[in-house]
Length: 256
Ligand code: CAA
Image 1: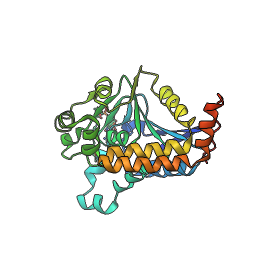
Image 2 (image 1 turned 135 degrees about the vertical axis):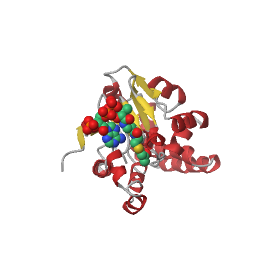
Image 3 (image 1 turned 30 degrees about the vertical axis):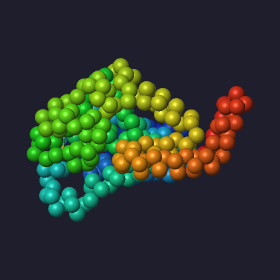
């Protein structure tokens, strides 16, 4: 099987690169299968503290593979449970950064939205053009884009198919950071190293708590956050972090 997904380790971070440049990284079934199994394997590795998911300069991903979709029936999609497989990405413990340059469309935009945060090049273009090919976003786009940017802009993007520039996406809250062309991958790696340098248990619990804010009602989220704080407080890393601060030294986190 050709490598549709490439993995590199750099210390405590891993960089996973979508590798179907000839099709603008269209998310074929085979690519998604490799991607999900790669991410799950990295997630099981305690040494990996943050993952960067990248495309190339021209495209993060231009959506689901339209040729494959055209050959499929509704019942094929239902039985093959292809989109259900994506749920594993949201279930990852390890923080996941989307590093986006160029086209980030359809299922590609939904994939970036499923990551914890997006670092984008000035050249990035975000869109949900599915209605242009007769379908609608089906991997979370109508829900996650709406929560990220609000109803008016989500309706505009999803119904008209217009692309958002990186600066528009930043202003709307879809993207965390925008950098000059040529800088997107290095910046995403810098953010990943920064995240990887923090206490790993606290980082994972904080990610889980933020997801609650994003995915559920406020009162439940507040309760959940409090419980996670108690859990983090019971870790050796919390003692180390607090003591190191008092002793004016750098903490040594062990993930315990
Ligand atoms: N699926 C399959 N192949 C794709 C693709 C896709 N989503 N997007 C691009 N490609 C292929 C093209 O067919 C072309 O292949 P060939 O060279 O073999 O002809 C190659 O990638 C390069 O693409 P273009 O020649 O079209 O490049 P361009 O620079 O002229 O245009 C583009 C770029 C505007 C992104 C255009 O490729 C495009 O509109 N792509 C489709 C975008 C889209 O509609 N995405 C939504 C898909 S549906 C979806 O995602 C469903 C879901 O949520 C569940």
